[in-house]
Image 1 (cartoon, rainbow, N blue to C red):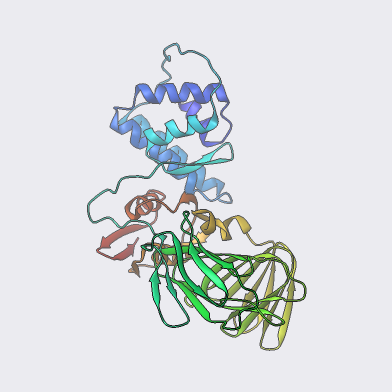
Image 2 (cartoon, one colour):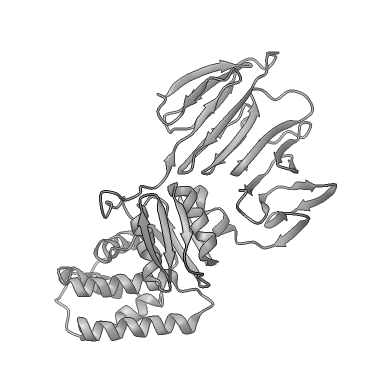
Length: 387
């Protein structure tokens, strides 16, 4: 059984062997100590940085030592089982259920569990689809509580909330003269998706806002952003799309890109996935190619090959980190769970993880603690971080 667990952690377990491991765990699921050992094994794998092989090996040896002391995993014969083809998704789901893990890798395939119950009554739930729409006349509409259907009509556009919780601007009169400006604002712990009057799709992250017209006339399409958003811009060569962020401007024709402009981050980062964009700041301009990122603070710096998977995880409902400092991680956690974070000790460790944003706060913090080097105390809406 130790060998099976070793190969599982190294992603070299064959389908037939995985079936045996699942069968064994199902037989042993009432043994609390064994569950803890397997859980720690899975979590250690999820958090061990790929570049730190020595640390990963040491973690695994510690797991095996603990297993030998508390619940020896002797190589004992398995009961005969009926051989069959096992779908990876079903197999991973059984392992997650028994081990208590939420998201991890099985031979490179990511899997996600069903929602997990909170550990205690005061647990902090994850964020969700929450936003406030402010119309040109000052009317405010809470989008998370608004019923689906038509919310308002402005500037030739019908503003609708769809069944999937999306805000959709449907242009019914392109020549309408009365163009107003609307603002969608997400709170800490909120996110929302918007389809602008030109068909451009925008994913708005937590603690962000987008200010835009109800119709795009003239020689350009301009919006203003705070926080973070991902854009899929409808192409119009004669009418470029521009995003204004503080003193920076992103100009595009038709492209997919992400802008992270939180004020508590060290720079404003524009990451290009498709097409091309110009990033302008204080008279300097950088032309981005797909797979590049512009970082703007007092100057523009172009970064080649940023970690797109990590940068775009929020849009797909995931936390994804690859050797990231804990302070950076906690800033994202703070915005998504609407909590404050206080560091009582300096934590120099970096962490790697791939996990759903749908879990309660206690579960996420537990994963971080089990990775080692950090301890959390939650006092209502404040997280205290210690060594």
